[in-house]
Image (tube, rainbow, N blue to C red; front, side, top):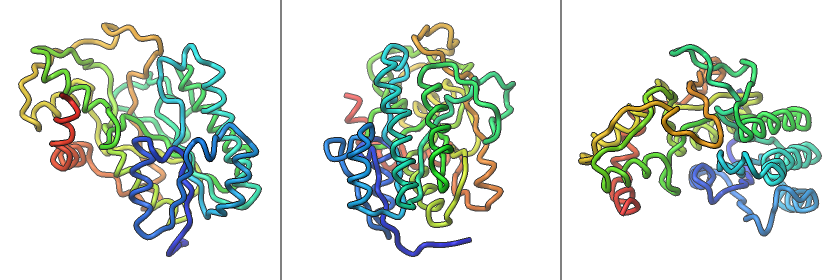
Length: 295
């Protein structure tokens, strides 16, 4: 395996939950360039080319995306611009200058109809249920068609320190309500953005190529996920199991979002840990911040 001692990496979406952890992790040992949207709007071909030519990075990481799943159902133009045309511009620009391109995708490219506990593999057919899922599927196609040196990294059920997420939602409700209803028929792998950032660093240093799944090992229901948070933080909130159908949402969500990190394991470069291990560490390290944010 090829190893690069030091690289110059450009990160798009560096203020987001995953992007901010990528910036922090990759800054240890590598040079990071993280232009904001005003400097580099990924939907602008001219800005993409100008910034790539000027920075001349070894690799480009795209964490920028329209991620409001329900809003995607009614904002088709914006979704296509940001989630499809943006990645296409970055893939084409990276290819023009010979840079590696790493694009973040999602478990939402799958329909979630596999029988539990069967996971989804990298080569399973994509059948998205929502406009967001369709946009991520089309972004993958755009990357594959335009970049000869790409990594597509599918992940899901992300939580992290820099932005509010499922952990914050449960803590906030637990401090305000006596009973919280959480679906017990939706399954996935709670995944720490910091761990994903470490895996991205490893992938770049090992010159990984292709489509990878990257989530924590093991899986649980949303209900079990919430109960783990409540127990670890010693909160008084009481959970009540319910069904996904009890929460009608504009966009359909997959019931089974379990992804198997098969290619990472096959190439012996996986550093992903069990979801309980990472979530415990995260809650321990960021307890004060989480509780403060939930006020």
